[in-house]
Image (tube, rainbow, N blue to C red; front, side, top):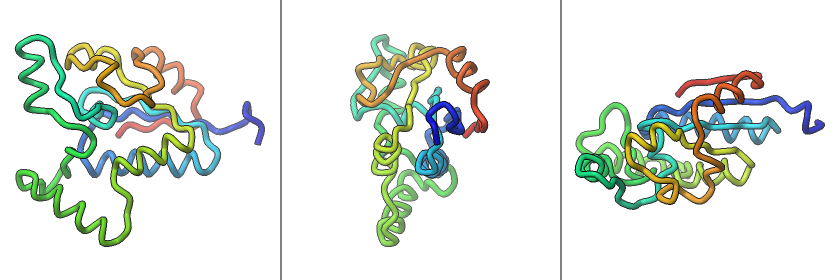
Length: 160
């Protein structure tokens, strides 16, 4: 299929919870493997999927927030049955037993398939997460207007 005729998928990822990130990256990799152009726009809690395993924040509140919310994609917990972190361990163990890739592996597959990852500039400013604290594969940190422009051109738009 010619590049200009490719179907397009635009996604907003608002959640940093394990199950929702799995759903978002599963849809994205499936679409990309089907030769769709895929753009993922990560905002607020969803930024966890793009963040390196480093501390963030400059101000007192920003550092405090970074401490409480800290971690990267591997620190995401299930939206139900988290049990103070034990749920994350249980899910990872069960998924590993079924040879299901980790979130980090699924994210890498998306990157390898050409999925474009965008961080929400406003959310990053509010949460004091600078671009250099994001994984190198983040295409750009953009505003909502960029996402709206992409979504207007998309055949499918999803909110996760």
